[in-house]
Image 1: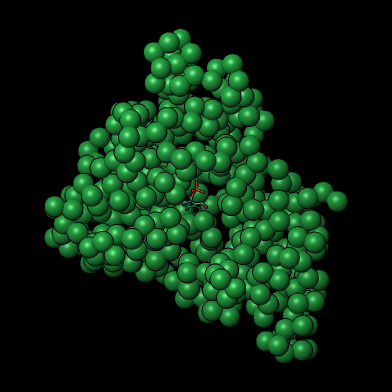
Image 2 (image 1 turned 90 degrees about the vertical axis):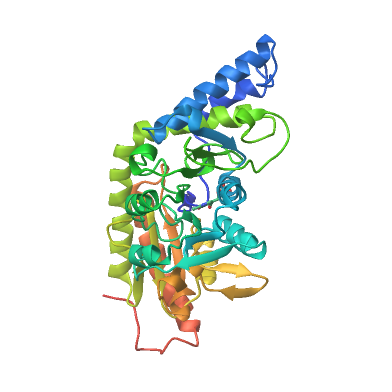
Length: 394
Ligand code: PLP
């Protein structure tokens, strides 16, 4: 049975060309990029060309504005805490949104416990940030706005240009978490006018454990990691040269394939939704119908629990992900769907399908065939399900 992987927003397989580019830096080219000898200089060269490749993915962007980190989570923490520390004398108010990744939300909670005031801006039913409310939330002491580029659960794309313009007009720093967007849709750092942007390699067929923060020269950000003089004193720690080389290659490939791949995945994503919607009653698509990542589909299957669906899909060789997080044994509905006003009982039954390079039409058709009987079986066992009232379509 062929495994069908529909969980690319969680992580992606490393592209063979990425692995090939990385291997020499674990073997013969193992130098430390800070060493002065030829091995070190070779590592430095590799690191700088990877920096240019990453910058190219979010062009226009100066390679010097790219700081390598260990992951998207670190980039988010760096941006939020770095800006908070650097600008704490100017003000202590930060604005973010209710639908951010936990890397942002939990960093914000940490700052809240350490003397900063946070405003969490709501979203509409499609998961789009309410810019008017955001504007009203701005205060004299607001130092930073952080709003994600595209949501990891629903794929909904945010009005980042509008928010960036607003932040610029008010002289406030703007950070965007573009971990899910970069490499899937065009992301142009300088054109949008963001000050900081988080990126991660493993969402775009690069290795895990490597990320970057774009930091515009205008941005006053304190270092988050202290130690040696790496990354021009912006992020201490011996650079993960092989990981960085892999990240660079992944960015180059993502840029080259983006247009074709996003068209292909949009067709497959819509085919999946149409198939599910045709085969089943009481299903709901979560997220914006159009302003959405080409690979992401979030569906609520009413009267069932997401985790049960996932386990049953897994038995059929299909990997997807739940829209809800499992916290210490109790099933908590997704904070993203909750912010969108999706009822808790409906949010519990949501599944995120995120497509990627290995998926073909035949995979989607198999998923469309496997899903309805699973849902029917689970509904038949569900106390929420009124037998005979709700059923399969057709
Ligand atoms: N931000 C978003 C939107 C994400 O989807 C993720 C990962 O799922 C992260 C940040 C964290 O990235 P990483 O896994 O590289 O730490």
